[in-house]
Length: 195
Image 1: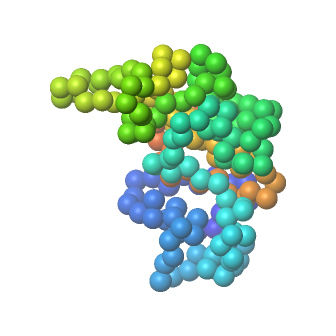
Image 2: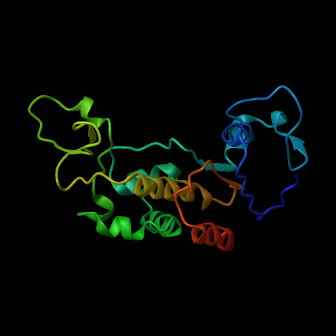
């Protein structure tokens, strides 16, 4: 398969997609066959230099107990304080409504599941129980003003984080490892038209 610049490829219905993504991103190596980027076997590229040209969103993307602004901005640390760049990335990820619904917009600290282990005794916290089997905790929140986002909302934040890097002229590849599986086909079309 040969993919030209500005072409989009959607791979579905076969096993090994995540492995292929990791090979393409040089997270793991392979010992059979070849994979060429710009006519060069990817194993010949310096990994640090190669990674400067990529951005990705994985199935198990990171969630940080930071403000919404930092959760997106960390995708490009050099532009962490560039509100226009962050707002553009949020818009491209169609996460505007999510950020607009937050109590303090971009300044809202986002609570992440699992953060409860870092609480000190006596710190107030709210929990939301999903009730599936007797009250397991689905999410701990720092306060009513620190909302727990749904998995789909977190996914949009993670995609906005990837778009922070994608705004750099040297980034040639955006890779979504099932990151958009929860979105409608209209969103696939939106990505295709805009990238």
